[in-house]
Length: 239
Image (cartoon, rainbow, N blue to C red):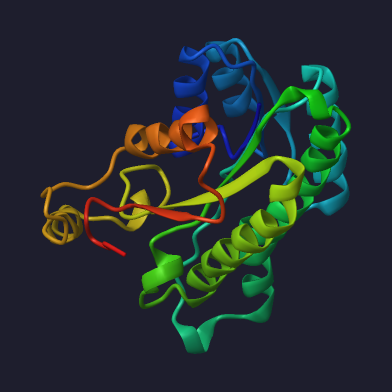
């Protein structure tokens, strides 16, 4: 299986969770040292790539799949967060967020699906995309992030419709507030308390909460799910 954005946080935890189930892993991230360390930890292969670079993403994804000997599962986890007031968002910053959060998913999916369909005997194949609660609820200062994640949800639905006849399911996860490195620089104790109060469970998510949901969407237990956007929000969003 291939996991993007696997150097830290949710992506690294997804790698560990799948490795514990015996998965053979190819991990992609622009952070070469960090993704290499996670790959070594889980017995997989690490690949350094800037997912905003279309040509490099296409090349490295293809190389990773070839060295795996094929691919059954693609987890498109890579993403970036920018917090900027709406009227101050520069179009270049908007494009940067979409390039990583949405466009890279299109590129890796195209490469992976071509590999999957070249080997039809592998059974049901899975694509899991990382969206966000922000793609459903939005939030101040994150118009470009929220829009990119809403686009992930739409891309997931469209891909599910096209790829279902090929035996490929496509679903996405919509995590809420998760305690990862993303946003840690601006997160305060008061923020954590306020956000925790929004959940009936009274806590924020941990990377393992999202990783286990990804495992469900990638295993045979979810064979009849496709085109879904599964909330992993501790009840902050319930539809």
